[in-house]
Image (cartoon, rainbow, N blue to C red; front, side):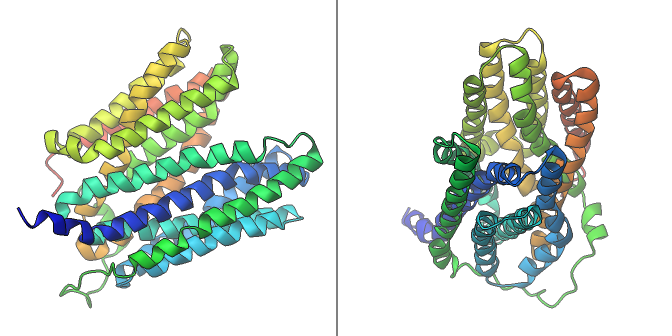
Length: 400
């Protein structure tokens, strides 16, 4: 009975990490809309905005796996956490001073690199420092903190741009907002000091050669975890992108759309806070299947032409709860499927797959939406989620 109070000091690193996660995610979600506004202010058309947005994912696709390898070798992952935060603080400063679209694209690329660097280190830190029994709980807290930043960032964007009533006013307001974004990222740096004692436990295989990527991808549970993760992430992205179009067709105001999206996000935060309790009652595989299958049903309900505001709100509340479960559980699925000394690499592969999915699935959904309307994009991603459900079900008995 006296051992329980000692758990708090051992977990102190986690609470410092969560502070850095909220700061970085707030910065990211404050900057992403500002990049588009900054581009338009400098004369960008829709094609140029698309290229600048794509620049966010280019460097991460190249460096994700090497960063994962590095995180597996370093005993102090806090170095990489600090590097990611510094890059995320520098990116908005570069964007604020940009006078050419090429500089905006460079700022977008630096932001993407900083975010990936930070997330590789943060996820690896959880994987290496958490007891096996606490992986689900700690990954749930990590992703709940990220979702909180995803709520705060857009709210800050709205507040900081509220008084911009002209092109000149928008440019000035955007610059000020980007300086605030740099500050929010920098607020995470002091918390890194609290992570400094969080070192990788020494193991007897420190000198062994790293497993080839092909070997990691063949391990039971890894391909399924990667595919399920990118399907769930793409579902959130497509919902955010196409719900305003569906709502406009049904006469639903932008303010209501914002409330619907906030409902989804809040429900996801709740489920991530409860994920540890849910895993104690149901198997991880069953919960992941509930996440993908329930999310597919919720998005299909939103896409139905007969769905009004109330029905969409209920579907998004339930769907948001289930959507939130999948990400932390697939993190645990992936790290438990590989040797401890390669967990950083496996998590970086997961992030790499997420970025690839954020490009490929929306591109395919756009083709469907062109033929079937905005609702068609949600039908398409629902089909992808059903395929993920089948993959998880088929993985039964093959996971370690």
